[in-house]
Length: 114
Length: 112
Image (cartoon, rainbow over all chains, first blue to last red):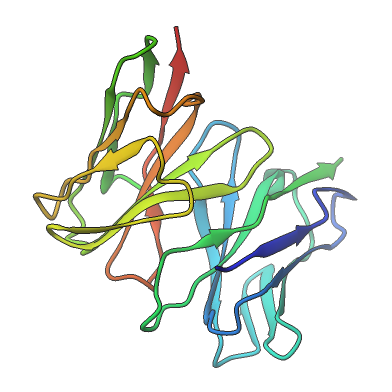
């Protein structure tokens, strides 16, 4: 089955700086890679996703990059703000014939220092 | 996401008791999922269903059971065979498998 590793487990950055969270996956058949943000005690919310036919996707201050060869994808948040503080999860899925749901990383606790 | 409703928000289980967590969606989604979240851990897939009357085991299905008799509903039963049921349970749905998943607010299960 798929295995997703996520680093770092905790990331503290100064407000206004950039944050980068990295994930690797093991199954070369995975082709869908979403990122979720979860605030304490609340539901995970999808913030951005990318499919294997593109290498980068951007939405305002958030961007995701994908390197299929290295089986590596990253979340980039620029100009961080206090409301960016949360736990972020990466995930991977084979959405084709072998589809069997998302496999999540263990999460990164992002702390934005004022 | 207002389209996915989980109930109850908090649930307590006694030893040897089965409990059922409710998940209802009005998004007309074919696929539904149950995840378990433990402190400091990611989400782990318990069961998923791609279509009515069909479901598959996820990574940690032992001690759990599900049914999918209606498109809108995917209840999860935590059986007495699940020896460590204390966790945050999240239900999700997507149009089909491989499309973005949207989550309910979760049910927090504890042992009395």
